[in-house]
Image (cartoon, rainbow, N blue to C red; front, side, top):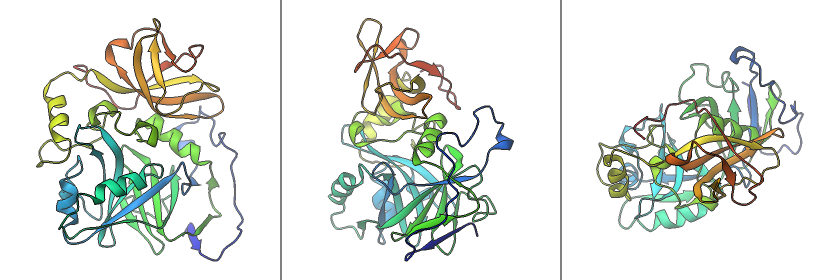
Length: 328
């Protein structure tokens, strides 16, 4: 077993690979080396544990995806929206240990817990902020603990779930606050985990961008994070109307900017005339450039684009690994 957790360990030997040079960017996929990183920090992940006999029906009435299709062997993305159809979070769902776990950015989890709990009413549902340790794995970092390459796999420590939309990365969730050690593979900075997510086109909703975007605007439909067949849920009317209009005028795209560009979630992007063009969803610098995901007006993609905070910095579009429908 690669990983072991020790609640009493104060220090441990670590093979640390300097960030961001874990890889040469010219490496082929066959040359990528397995790695892991710590995600239990302010910029990392946290989880809500939703238990009780009514948990599936309750969450199905809240989230954008069909929770009834979730199994202990599968995982999925889902959004939770306001009544106006604006995303309050995007979470990864894991069915494990007689509960459904909602994994999301730590910066939003407390606000989501408070608001989501208001809808429980008489349902047999308990929503708790879980005390867990989060580890990110990449490029085969989970292969020893997950030899069958399943979407979800549990071991004696916790549960490992591949990231929907980017199966080269996984999340390892371990109950309790523990020191996790791996003496066989390299340890990366957590920023590398998020950089890979940006390059895969998998969005995060941070505190700065809560209730800024409709689900399709961050491509959640293209990542199988929305069910258009299931029953009602909060914000469904807006999401269905957006889908049925036939033309989605704002979509999320991948961009690059200079390494010192002041690009953070929520930053506005403007066109050459200084008019609004889009808004940053997520951004990470690797020391050479900033990679960022931004929701853009599709009609603004052809011209020069700059950061509103400092228009000396331009952004250039890169390719996402999945296609955005031409009709959009």
